[in-house]
Image (cartoon, rainbow, N blue to C red; front, side, top):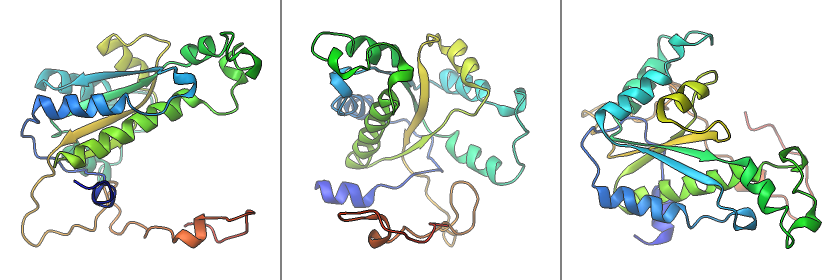
Length: 224
C-alpha cells in the first residue's frame, strides 16, 4: 500500500476474528518495529510475543482486574471491549528499560548531556516514547499487510502479575500491548459507530487549526 493510504486506513480494531495470523506478517511487524527512532540509538525495548491459545489465555488471566485490588470492572462497556479484544490471535507486550538509557547516556559521547546519572534526571521518559513509536510501526505494518491492530494498556495493579506470568524482568516497564488480527466481520445492519470503550459516539477528530500553533502557542477551546 501507498504510505498515505496506510496512514489514512489505520484504525484501532476492538473486535477481532480469531483466525490465526501468518507468522510472516507477525515477523514483518517486529522487523519494522525495531526501525523506530530511539534516543541515543539505545533500543531499550523488548517485545513478548504471545500467539498460542495457552499464552493468550495466560495473559488475560494475569490481567483480570477482578483478581486485583483495583475497582471491579464495569459490567457493560468493559465486558464488550474484552470480548472483542480477547479474540485477537496475536498479542505483543511492549516493554521498555529505563536503565538502558541511563547507561547509554553515561558513555563518553553522551555524558555531557547530564542524563547518565539516574532515570529521574530525564525530563521526559524517552524509553516509553521510543517503545510507543515501535508500537505505532507495528500498527502501520498491520494495515500494510491487510489486517488490523490495537494498542492498549495493562490494567493498573496487574503489571507484576504479567511480569511473573511471562518471566519479564522487574526493570522492564510494560508500556502497552499490541493486538494483531483480522477485524471481525460485522453482521449486516450492525452499528460501526460505537467505540471500543462502549461509548455510543466517539468524539470527532480535533480540527488541525485547533492543535497546530504556528510561531506561538495560542488559546483554544478544550478538546472535550
